[in-house]
Amino acid sequence: MNQLITGKFIAQKRKEKNLTQEQLAEKLGVSNKTISKWETGKCMPDYGVVKSLCEELEMTVAELMDGEEAEEKSVRAYDDEQIMDLLRRTQELEKQKNLLYGILLIVMGIALLAFPHILGLGGSRVEDFFSGLFWGMSIAEMLVGVYVLGRSLSG
Image (cartoon, rainbow, N blue to C red; front, side, top):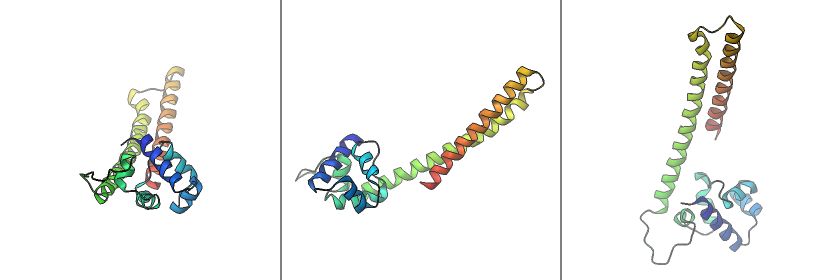
């Protein structure tokens, strides 16, 4: 599956139906920027809108994934339901991966926060500098972790 080819196929089918990006977006309940991202290959449609998109543009899920219309006598190894199940699972795994990244960043930030104490840093100006540097890096890492965690839980 090539996002760019799929995106061009979405644009082609939308234009065949004489729809603007805004009109298609309205029908699907997404923004016109989302349609633009699909059509330029920057991202793929979310699992939740794939069926609606396919119905609106009169294509199968397999055709969407292939980025081209299926030939008349072509045989598919998977039907639309199986492809939708794979899409759902893939998006769930992606969400779990991002969740783990967020947790890992927070744990690493906490560990980095303890690092100057383990090394016994502090006392001289240089040691205080490195202690403060580790402290700042750990706080930044934990904040990034919280951000990643928040994004994965809200998406």
